[in-house]
Length: 101
Image (cartoon, rainbow, N blue to C red; front, side, top):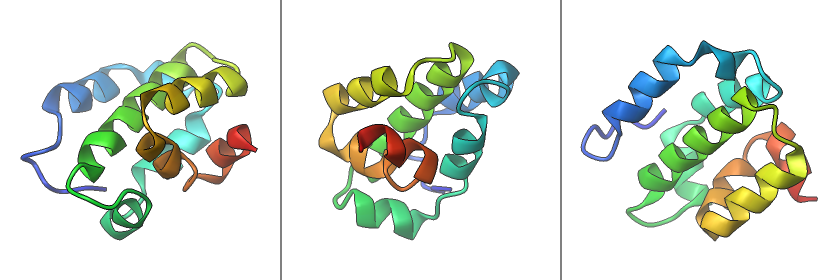
């Protein structure tokens, strides 16, 4: 997981901590896999200095999608509408990559 506290969002960390429903929903396995990505994996998928920013967005979106049991197509459309970088990061997780096929 990214360790650069300058770009991490403490509010997002709090939201994830206080929303255990996200870890019970449709994307619970993918969310755990997403949270276990290394800094190098994320940097390769999203080169540049905004990797942590987009990584936090993907976590928030997948967390909410899991909580709401969102359809895979809807999740993919939502991530596409944000940025190509969010799609690249999401594709690192096998269960999320399937939604973009």
